[in-house]
Image (tube, rainbow, N blue to C red):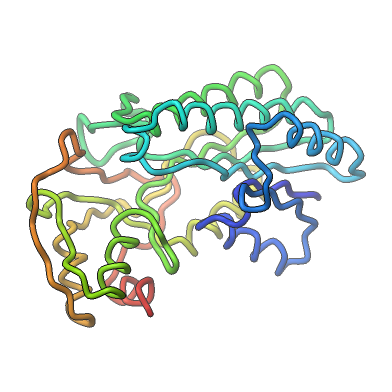
Length: 278
């Protein structure tokens, strides 16, 4: 089996790549950091040629994406242009006869503001950001191509992934505050609830789904919600951290907790400390 891994040097993708290489699997690693922009036609044509010439069946692990929901509000066309075009090219690769399966990492952002919690996979999809909307469109695009070309498709709607080396989100901001000694700002009252899942567990899940017969759309979550304040308190047990509360972000989702189809361990303070180890 040959694995095409997009986003291979990213936060999650780098872990998946390490797992694949550790098992001795053949991997085509694609990443923007290597100058491989999947939204470019020449990059697509090169990958198409490499897969066409492969003797083995191919599984595509499509993780590459711009993922900053807040940035997407300011630069929506950047997100639509990158994420959608890249996924369109990946979907076109699935027309090749030796492509047997694609595993796509989507996001809980497709749900938008929840009408109820925990959020199950049948919850209405009402994205509140261009990022979430791009992920939903990508899901639909891959589903349409799957019906046409007959490849297996697994869509993993990831909730809040955290772990070592994270640059974005809550944990990226906490790491920068610890490293610089600057005040850590909490938007709103800090009682926003999120379902945090560890990046190592997520990487293993992606690989397991790639290697077994799992298909369909699934929530990958712990099913347990934790507030921002709780995470910050855990951090302050180990690191000096000055905290300041500031104005809430307009339209921010108050609570996002998944009903897991694939259940991962819930966050603990020990895992938080590991994720922020300096």
